[in-house]
Image 1 (cartoon, rainbow, N blue to C red):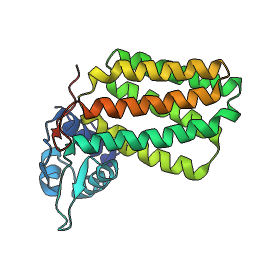
Image 2 (tube, helix red, strand yellow; image 1 turned 180 degrees about the horizontal axis):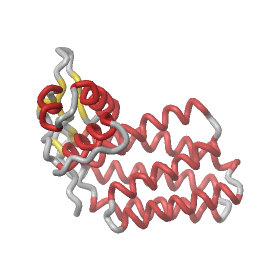
Image 3 (tube, rainbow, N blue to C red; image 1 turned 60 degrees about the vertical axis):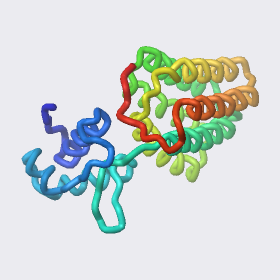
Image 4 (cartoon, rainbow, N blue to C red; image 1 turned 180 degrees about the vertical axis):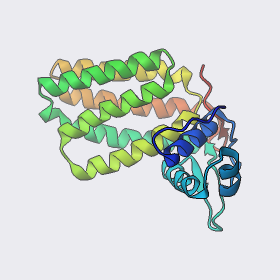
Length: 225
């Protein structure tokens, strides 16, 4: 994998390690050693440490009590819990946004949901993740609750980075149908029904995920299927 230098060394190292983790080049549980990474990427130790701190915040790297770091191991239970919490904050945002979704905001939401569902349907997982974040941010802006926004941003960062490790191609139709239904109900002026539909989607999503494998099973890098 080629190493390209973007805006800053920290960003370059973080993006490179992120790609290695999500592709499986750095396997779940693999040790993360600052000096080894710095030597391999031919950078100083400081941007490596800063990048690793960023990845810890995203849940892709774990720091243990003895200060050793390793690539996070995602279990089936953790993946389900990530989606459960994402559902909680997303439904909360929609519920509070409904009274304030004027035509402009509804159009903006429609654009982001359309982009998200189209990219998800084409199995462009990284791009669809960005579209989903943008859609939730439209809801958060309309909800106008700073504490909810701060909490949702943290949840999205952690949930949508880590869930990329989950082989989820078979769940794409569920995502597309749920979000398109929600958008249709909002456009029809059926706000409470849209909230109920989104809540039902996340409930069905986590139910389907429970059927995939035992809760304690380790989930490997995302299969772009």
